[in-house]
Length: 452
Image 1: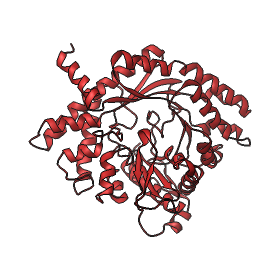
Image 2: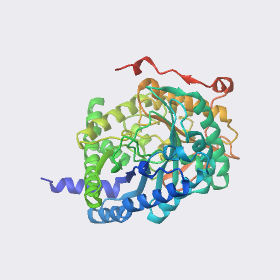
Image 3: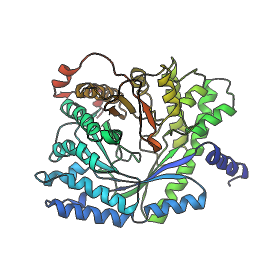
Image 4: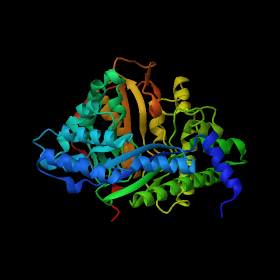
């Protein structure tokens, strides 16, 4: 039985603590749209996505209105396009990106993800063409998001792909320099990418998924921070317990929305991703949660330990609230989207090295970090390789979403607007990794990959 105090508590979370459903993401398989004629394949893709997702936005808006729960984004994720494009490799692969953008506009969704390739162990037909097309694809579309998986614990790290992605990130930023380099903000490089991630820019519909599913991503950093501020915990164990209880409440709301959307759309429920995803809004910050635990400022010594506690407690609380938890689930640390992180960078407490250390214990990796526009492609590749190594060795998902701010230097600011916020331009480390990156080949999988 739901008690009155629980209802009032949830209302307060929504009204005053920035609790929301960050996204309802419909995952759609495009395997049956494969055709050697790219125009026919694109027609099949457009028709299938429209058929499945025609009521997605309306359903999200109706649920939001009926339950009083903010649902910020309605999104679509599709099968990695490089797989669909494998038989069309002699044709202009950019048509797929334009088709995805067109269907997103038709349906009114916020983003569509899956302009992606999975190359952790090597390149298959369609992979090269897709990666080479990313800068142009993201400059000519507004709602398409792209991702490339370049490593895994089982396969190791494809250093040829790492080198290629460093160049791709830089070219994408240059291609969109007149629009605040926004293309690079819609491009993620993964190690151990998951198949059911509802969050952009890295969402794609894995080949092991059902034909169509509904995944939901929740968000509630403000709620966790408020709970900690109202309850002065006696020790660190009480902090962990309080975060677990709060994560349980947040996830229950996500479970409710996911099952309701699934029922109304007659689409199977996939997972709830219970990640704490911050926004630029005041009070909706993961950094501020860490500071509420007792840190003077995010980035000081103790930050990684506090983040590890937070990430673990969120997962433990969330799995008790939903039978199907998946995606990335934990705590995100995107710099430009988190007011507390931005403050820490501006005050000199947080740099890219400390952020890299924090990624060993958080949900993903180096996210929404703005770097100087004259950063070389080899340095970007080396950043990707470092982050992939953390994911590979620790059997966790890691990712890099860095934005070279063309024409800007450290200390400047690059503004994206909306949920993406504005990021201070951060220095990279000195020294060149060009010779290392140019070696190519594949970093072998670690010993812990041999679990069979």
